[in-house]
Image: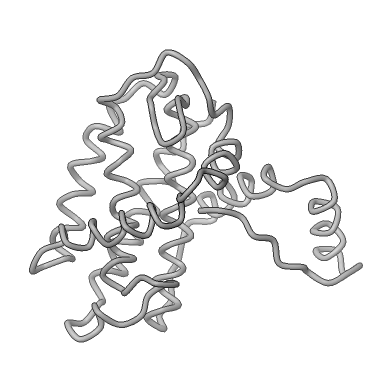
Length: 201
């Protein structure tokens, strides 16, 4: 199993760097879908914090057999989009008066636990059990994609490490059906248009 903790560290640092640039009058601006900038930041931070807190919830059975399987299963759960949206709003409230300081403090605390964890441990997450190393890859997807969402909402650049982006793309391609994968291959080689594919993260 590939250890993506170095990529997760680097992606989280780039996320924190981007948060450092947010001005006081930007926090309540639109962020992504129904979230404000503050709520998008809260959700992204929460995705890493949960990687630490789920270590307190061991599982005996693996339900999600891969990162792609996790996203595909969770995306079909009843009410999942409303639940995730509410989590983002709740996480925003925890950012306090100085969100940038909170982000760095909470990331540091989460990584103390993440770095000490066994990758082959099985933890109970949304929808069932998953091998911890696989769950960390889902967190990398969240941090990379939502940092990009945040950068676009702010009109700023984000510079995710190539290795982190490559890992994320691997998860997305694993989520594609054979027909979707063939269409992507055609688009990447100039043989057809790139059709939008709705993947959950």
